[in-house]
Image (tube, rainbow, N blue to C red; front, side, top):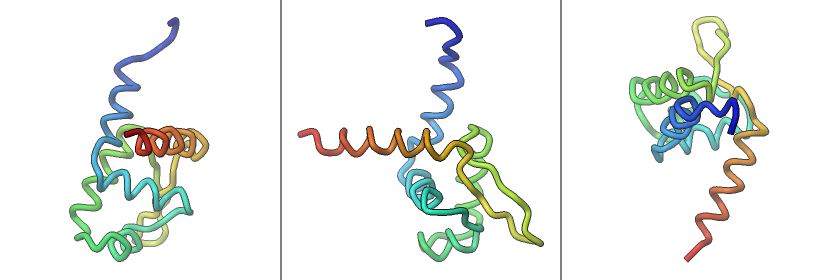
Length: 95
């Protein structure tokens, strides 16, 4: 396939290959969230969440906007993530 950047795609999928990051992305599918919102929802500590969010950001899954002293994260391509999650749900139902 022409213009198929395997390295970029592998990095994107690798960023999603952790249960916590999948949960974060699932929450961001609903709407943008600040780190403290994610902390409350997932009941994880802020440094752990920030580490996961940074990896997702470096892999172009999420981005953030500064809201005062808070970073609020959102999906860079919500439609792509929704389609990917639909595929993953189908895989989850395979015996």
